[in-house]
Length: 180
Image 1 (tube, helix red, strand yellow):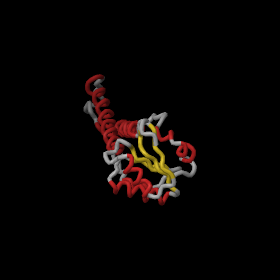
Image 2 (cartoon, rainbow, N blue to C red):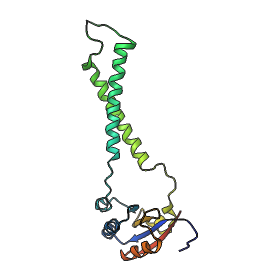
Image 3 (cartoon, rainbow, N blue to C red):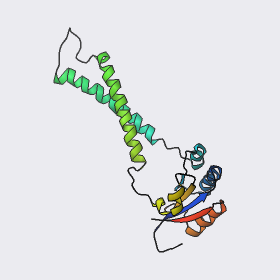
Image 4 (tube, rainbow, N blue to C red):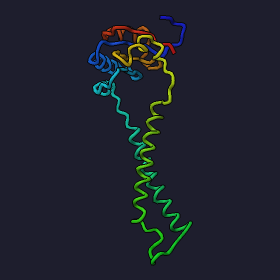
């Protein structure tokens, strides 16, 4: 491995999904936190092994829905009471039962748009390039039959030689350095 080039991390290839899940669990148990796994299909046990339980999208959707409801109700109230008040049959200017359909629709609209935007933003998209594509075997096999685990160099526990030995101890078929 050439030590003069900047390193994004180390990537290990595994034979099957079971080995990848076991390697991810051991990687987390070893103290690594900045690592990722790649497979051609979703492996649900992998999320538990990596402790990926991010709830930020749910929070953003809730906040977007609340904002949408407030905007819908506030806009109708402002129009009915301030901008264009009409006294129809002695009813109050802010008659909340007639505001419910629009308030509900704007709640759903804002929540769904927030979900899409939060998902795109938190995933770092659009990302036309990622350093893992510098590894030839990853570029060839990732979407067909490859199971990969990458440990990033900016992880606090990352040490090139120790991490390399750790990945070898996991039973990796091949280990490659990811150039930044």
